[in-house]
Length: 301
Image (cartoon, rainbow, N blue to C red; front, side, top):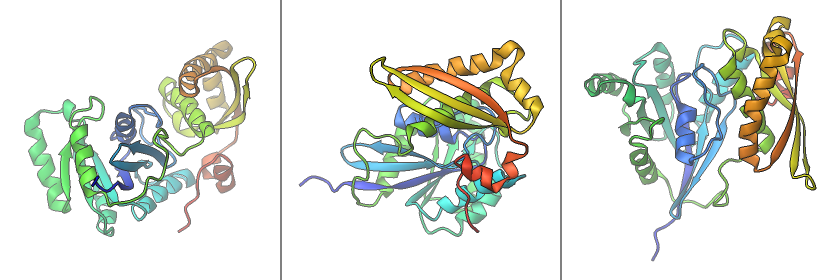
């Protein structure tokens, strides 16, 4: 008899910028979550689907848990914490280089209220000396009884296969929720908007990256020309930010569009004609109606 098929949901949680999206992309072998060296990059739950002949794991990459400063921040934190009650397994990711922070205790307090197995994933071990790992692990072990503690480097892939083996061990028997070749349940429009936002994160600094949202206004496939036409609006909060995004003689907007178009073409497998506009919507991150319009889920208390 063949082994019973396993399936389940695993949440990836942690402070901002600990490598959650990098881990998800590494496991899937392709990019579905945007990556940046700036904190609070992920704003929605990103579902990544990993399937083998024996199992299917639906990973949920959550927004970095942090002390919120506006309604968008409140939504992001509530979304991440609510996920803990919806999964079969929690992967608590920490940054070996950063070490322990007060935000970790905030997360651990919530982990204590869950009934599912929790792994401690010590990421970025390529950034520290091995002698530094044991004291760090001991500190976390004193705060919570983790089912497994696994040091990894998501960027280099070190020990990621060991992590996957342990996840499989804890998965319950279950059905195959998605087809074998599906790697995310998000629509293409969502991924396209995220890829555009990623390029802005990479190319801008200070307050600009956190003050933007990207809305896909049009996405139309021209079968005869083998071309996908995309129109998108970049939302900012102030006129000064609009000027930065556009750049001198439109240079910044052109660079954003060029870089985004290349990745979108790789994603959808066709040529892309991308048009970008920039619009000011003052303090949109504190407007609940605008957050809904821009595709951010409002979590009820």
